[in-house]
Length: 109
Image (cartoon, rainbow, N blue to C red; front, top):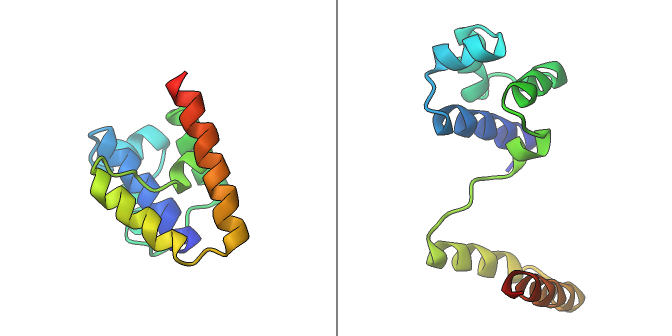
């Protein structure tokens, strides 16, 4: 997925997650409805200034807009992980395994 897709999907996800129409979201962040529509339809990538304004209004970091939504469906998460693991080299798989062990220990207390 490209940077533009990630950022525009993140902005749309933020708007919908806050139950805002495009008009309401535009008002909150100080943009026109047409600008929001163009961003969501990937007609243009928002500027750093626009991204910063959106993040400030919703108390987010720009990285929060780039991270795709995580599914609550365990099987779809496992399928996504398995698809990514197939492309990994042995050294990468070893590192991933070690990270998983650390995460599991951290959250099991």
